[in-house]
Length: 234
Image (cartoon, rainbow, N blue to C red):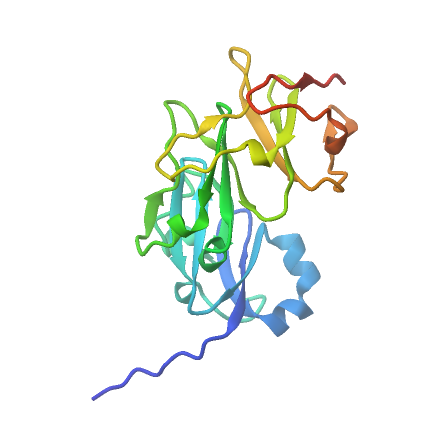
């Protein structure tokens, strides 16, 4: 009888670059190469080697990846496209958030869409065995522009293509099921869409560059969900 050797459970660092190429390395290797890893990686997640990772995409899907399927080795070892080890397709969708699946059980997840919808979902709803599920319901021609794990953030700022900024309290966002569309976060003028989402703490200056100038997001007047926001001029 052949008895498969039990894998020793250990923490590893998952690294993925902006092209969707991924690998895992042990924590001492990560610490020795931390600066290079931060410069080269779009996603860095500490996870158990026996655990699972999830990626949320602009199409409203969540794809599950087993950490054991990600190549493990040295820092300069070759990475593999996550398309090869999951149901994710780089040609059809873009990654909005990558996270450890076990972390989601401790928190709620915020969703924001291009057409200005939002909701909170209990992270336990994403503890599934399936390789992919619908993470949220989208209306026609809508797509996800922001997914955030709700930890200690207090306010959210939505930025629109036409230059409107709306800042409001996260406590105004209701909790819904993952199969729900959600509620309206911002009133958009015809033809306008949400282009960026920023989740902030009160003491976070959160500076962004807007039309070649520095804009401090926490200085934007606090408004209410489902209002128009303010137009920021250059």
